[in-house]
Length: 217
Image (cartoon, rainbow, N blue to C red):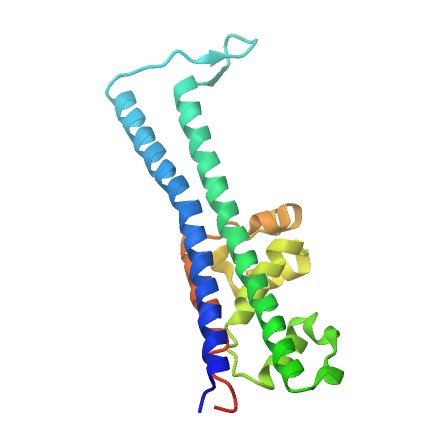
């Protein structure tokens, strides 16, 4: 029989994930709406150009060199800002929910072992690396291995280690817009492109990686 303690910890875990998801939506949705609007404006601008509209270009010191068209440049600059902000929100969200997962399991396992008078068996080094944390959790609960994907992405985003980023590229090439070595070498974690779909997958994996089923049920 599953204890009330377990049901409470699982409910609290899912409630926290739901709150993180709500924060994500309230943060990213307004910027997504701005991006949709500026893309509509760019489409309207391009149509007006096809219909004969011409801007007066900005000119450099050399009058023969056209630098840009002010209205067009402004629209594309705004679009670039929206894309960058959405990317930053997406990346930060994955890092935040993975570290929530780590902290939550730390509290659950420490609390459980203290309650069972196993304080002398607690080695805090067991919670500092993923493999040892997973081993510690597995003594009490089943755990979904899919969380490793979120761990790999979060650590690559946070630390920018080139070796980890190359390993990530090999395992999940779909989260990279460019895969050439030059880009990976010089841009590091900026080479990783996290879309809304990636964040939604991360939420799903983290939701399914909480204390859902104790081994002693």
